[in-house]
Length: 299
Ligand SMILES: Cc1ncc(C[n+]2csc(CCOP(=O)(O)OP(=O)(O)O)c2C)c(N)n1
Image 1 (cartoon, rainbow, N blue to C red):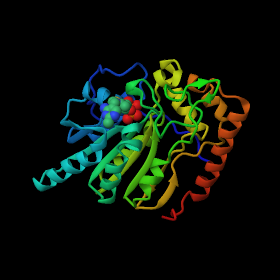
Image 2 (tube, rainbow, N blue to C red):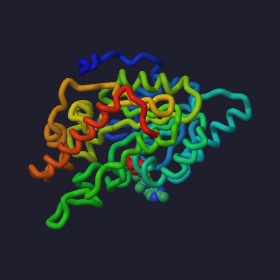
Image 3 (cartoon, rainbow, N blue to C red):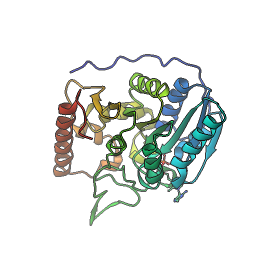
Image 4 (cartoon, protein in one colour):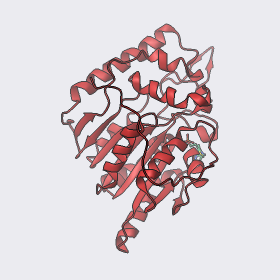
């Protein structure tokens, strides 16, 4: 097992303005700051409705376009093709939330991936529709309390498991798919650098903590994000050249999921049986990923 990654300063020109209109401790703002340092000024970025639109629009002074939830995949495709037709080379980057990526926006993104459009698509995953008050999305984890999956006498939070969107995207056989976390900036930077120089559809799925929706003190945002990785709740990996799977970070041993989840009030109602269920799922999935590490995916 590899050592914990040392912290390094993220190099690059600071593009993000000093102020932005996201909440204190917002993972999206941290993601944007890091990402634009790597992407640089020769970038056009796009948004669909959500917190990431707000975070970027208020602080990233680069060429931008926004559209409806359903249109995210079409918008990045159109811009990329337009640039190619006029002989211009720019990074075309879609920054969409988990709702905009995994639910309403999935069809157009899938079509863009299938056409292998030359774009980078970044899913900023805070695990619910946070911009409208925290309704569940397809990427909300099981048992999480949200405004549409509240905890009450007949309800224990979200009933179903988190959708595995990185694997859905990998099944399109695109050149690059990766997961990342705002708590592992070096890993995130390396993945962005790799994606930036590659032609075709690149998909980065970044777990982005939300103090408001997850329920923890904003000063702890990186600690909470790190615990999600250290517990195996959010594994860091990449799939290159269509199907080569590699874990990019292997904690010495996984921390108990309870250590990560008990810090978030969206899980404060969990009983031992529910923790046990999540723990078993994580161990089973971690075993599967460890077996796949360094191998080709059967897709
Ligand atoms: C078709 C449609 N349905 C609903 C909305 C309302 N709406 C705006 S932002 C948003 C939440 C976005 O959530 P997500 O994509 O997860 O991003 P987050 O805000 O959590 O970063 C919703 C539901 C909308 N704009 N369009």
